[in-house]
Length: 307
Image (cartoon, rainbow, N blue to C red; front, side, top):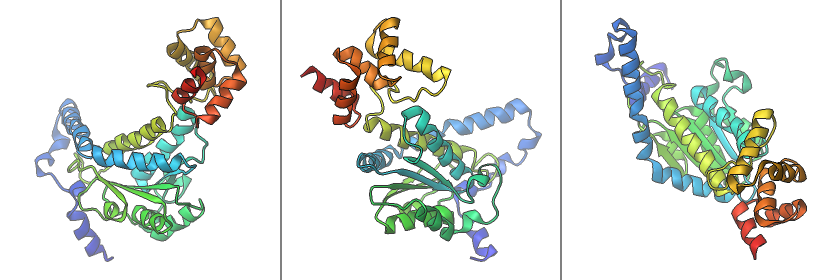
């Protein structure tokens, strides 16, 4: 693609549109700029709301595959890639997932988290190589993330993943995007032109963060990683999380502190098992066995324990 073609393509994108009414923004008082920015952000959740049926369909398809042992893989460049890496990195401490269960790929590799890697986003071949290193299977889900919906790395990732039989999701912030068209599940959250022309780390980035939160969180709910709205699969890796584990067991069971400490000690700090021990009146090994038989779903394990 020539530089003229690329300029023409960018000029046609909603996310890149110039807003003449904001041409004097740098002359406004700081509070007025903050108010403008806040007003812009207020429209993002409504744009996400218009895509909820598509998001829900993508979640159900992803959860079905992850329930068979598949992985959730995000692929993007720049801000979109960083948001994917962020979401993936927060799944192990929140949901006790294996570090390779939710994976964030960013064009240019880990260095691109803090530095722009020249040309990486323009390479569909780089995306293919990054995915091939993961040895994708049909149980895996690949989510391409790109504000423009045209980034070659994200589009290339989705096209390659789909050719290998993996589930594919395309998350973009422009209508009629190549990324959504390439994916089985296209999600286009159209937030409109940015306050600063083309700075898609703003509204587009916020929209992507909200959707990625939904994709991972609701998938984990479907996989039994929560009990109600409690993070029962939390990994107690520091003092704060150990205190949170105690509190979660308390909220789920209503047991007193000594009982909770005894149950957590007996189950090696595993919150789900401790809750099962307290609510079903069973020992730690039995709780572990029932959870294994229930594929980690605490409600199902409780049902089995009570019958």
